[in-house]
Structure formats: structure tokens, C-alpha cells
Amino acid sequence: MARLVIVSNRVPVPKARGTAAGGLAVALRDLLTPGAMWFGWSGRLTAAPSTQPAIVEARGVTYATVDLTPDSYRGFYVGFANGALWPLLHFRLGLMHFRREDYEGYLTVNRSFAASLAPMLQGDDTVWAHDYHLIPFARLLRKEGFEGRIGFFLHVPFVPPSMLEAMPVARELVADLCAYDVVGFQTEEHARDFRDCAQRLLGATVEGEWIRLAGRRVRAFADPIGIDAQGFAQDAVRAESDKQVQRVAESLVNRALAIGVDRLDYSKGLPHRFEAFGRLIEKHPEHKRKIHFLQICPR
Image (tube, rainbow, N blue to C red; front, side, top):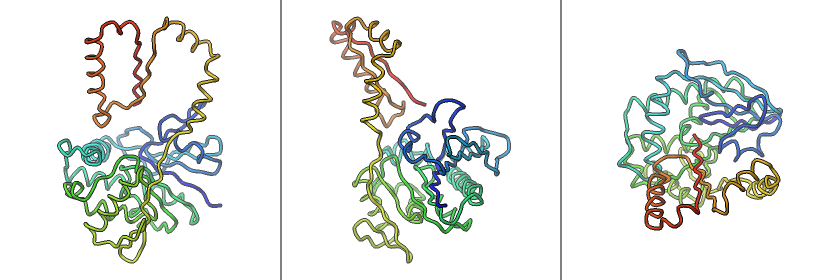
């Protein structure tokens, strides 16, 4: 039976009780139906890399994870993914730090992911890889013999050719994205920038959302991912009767409560937001006793 196989850098394996946490888990919750599989890094660092995935079954979904060594983690995750790709894709070239050995580590981990997952796949599975950590994954999975459908979704922005060319391996990255059958982006602007990169850097032919390159076609389009806003609103209404929520509300004593949920990184501008908030309080001290600010910082 055909399955959806999700592949991501980290896999939020559910605990014995409760559900998987994290933004990706929330966004993909409706797709995690019985029979689906989620594959990726366990979050653990071990002395020797694991090639045989550890398996956890929860609510009919299979969670398959592998460990990384500290050296692999530094090159793949810290070095290339977060040290080079992240600032580049967030238009922060001044913070981009490219090292060839980090890029080689990035390829090595993607290759090991492909080698570990391939034996678990069935011919009619659909593989869906997520985010900038896994750009080369489709090409490497094809080398392992998988001939099924492979899609990709980029959860961060994409940049135009003039900026992407600052990356020494820009052509390789664009070619690797073109190895997928479909590539999804958050906005049409980002999808268009990618199509422009394929045309300019690789000489691909672009026809609407379709890219023709080396005898095959890939669809690059915008399909924004989000959350179930109505479901969150219903949860908020139900929470009004919770005793702990009521205690928090009573403790405010007619003060406003502002809750921010953000990851603390420079792309969000949070250090600047805190500075602006501080200056506001300094300028208008009369509001200091009226506002209680709670910052929730996901890891």
C-alpha cells in the first residue's frame, strides 16, 4: 500500500504520553495518519554513526531515526546548514561562512540518510523531504535505487540569482533541487526566484511553474504551510475554564498580557524588538506597571 514518507533533519518522536512537539509536527499533523512514516535524525550524538534506524510506532505512524556523530553534526548542521545556507537564504550574506569541508559533511549526512532510508521504502511510496538541510537528498536517494515520487518543501525564504551566486556551490544546490519532482515554497516570490536561478545558473527552460532540465521536468510552486488557526482558537476558548489559566488571568490585576512565541535567531529581529520594547518603557514609565510581557522561546 502506498505510504507518505516524511524526511526531515529532526524527527519529533512522540513520548509515551502526549503528542510530538515542534513547528513541523504541528504543520504536518493532519498528514500523520496510520501507515505514514517519518524519518530523520534522532537528535542524539554518538561516537559511531548509526546506519540501522531505530523504530518507534505511535498511533499507527512509524518514526525511524538515526544518530549522528559530533563531527557529522558540526559539519552538516552547524557548519553548512546553519553557518552558510541559513544566512544566505535569509539575505544575510555578511553572516554567511562557507567552508568546503562543511559542505562535504553536509553531503555525507544526506548520503547516509538516503542509504539508511532506501531499504525501508516501497516502490509506490511518496517521499516528502523538508527544508534546507536536505537539498541534495533526492539525488542521493535516486542513487540508492528509489524510483518513486520525491517532493521537497522549503520552510525558509529563497533568494534571487544575484544573491545565490555568492554561494560557491550555488549551481550544485540548484541542480540538486531540480532532482525533486516538485519543490514547494512559502511564497510565489520565492518560487519565482528559484525558477530564475535554474534558468540563469543551469540554462534550464522555464514554462510557468515548470522547469525543464536534462530531459526531465520539476514543478516549482508556492503552497504556503501554516497552522489550524480555527483549532487554536477553539483550544483558547476551552482553556478559559482551566483553573491554571484562570489563576494567571487573576494574577495580572487588570494588566495586559502580551505573549510572543519566536525562535531566538537574528532573522526574526528579536534583539531589536526587545531593545525597542525597553526604550518604550523608558520613555513611558507609566505603562511599566500595566504590561506583563511573557516571551516563549522555542528551541
